Image (cartoon, rainbow, N blue to C red; front, side):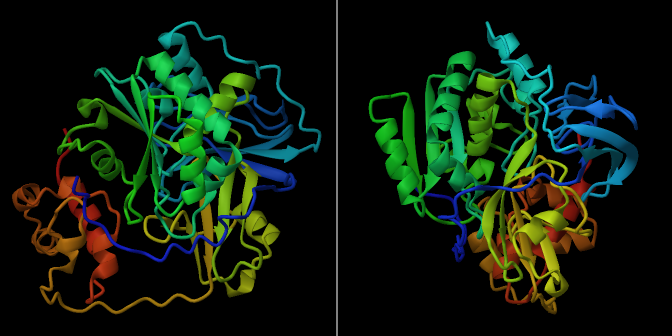
Length: 425
């Protein structure tokens, strides 16, 4: 089967053999009420309240959202306004830790008897997509369409990031347990664990673990970017095409990140909600690159200092990978549910943009077969009908076009702005 287009990147998986280390408990945490795709929560606590580990501290009655829990025990010192990296404003709960890590009485193994109770429990876990997008897991696992294939996204195709890889190496039983749990509760017949070829140890381990289970297929994907993008991994694993305006469920598929499925298994064993994250910390300003388990709400500054980062030399801090990650405007912003990497860079040059030379490189690498140069032109004259014709809504903002452009044009950024011009249904 022909694979979709993409680009070859230097993997720079410097921390792939770095076992996850537990970061010491911070003296305080700041936990935003919006850490995922969907409606923000409202705080359930106020200044002066005492909280415990796993206690629910934020909730909303909006279905497209998930609750927020505390990862520490201690005293609430403030409930403040907080501006997220996307520019939205929500509430944040600030907690002074007491160092005891007393576990909440709310933390109990969920009682699950059917699909409905399973989906309810998934929501109560606070789970959202841990690959970076943050889509509420309970919504993803409860589509109206009939699902026959579960794809576990273990590509982790961005340079530097190895957090998902360490999940595979350190918690393989949790992953297989999570896959079987989701399959049985949703009545899904087949699971495909899709792993990039640059992770041979993980491929070998899971192939051995699944050798007697014909409902779990280990799929080896080419090491190319953006192999982990949802539409790309669906096509490259199954041959199915998710068309414009469709969801993966319309093609009978659910895609779930490998760290998400591992977390779900642990949650259904212990009842402990999503209150910590494994992050890869790397970059040429970091003295000790490593994978770190961090309590959600810990400041990026503390994480970087734990990894011996030369803070004075940092010119750019990126949350996520270098291709699709976001620039962090404030080093004191907290780790959130969707955090999977921190890259601290001490050399950063803004390249000058020149005129398009019509070389066609952007077209050749686009996984969706789009024409970024033409989209760029249509955007400049605000031709909405032309943008629709050029299928700009299929753009996943992977950045491949920008990466290969010899004129250093910000094509992926323009695509994102162009999508904002088209009215949503």
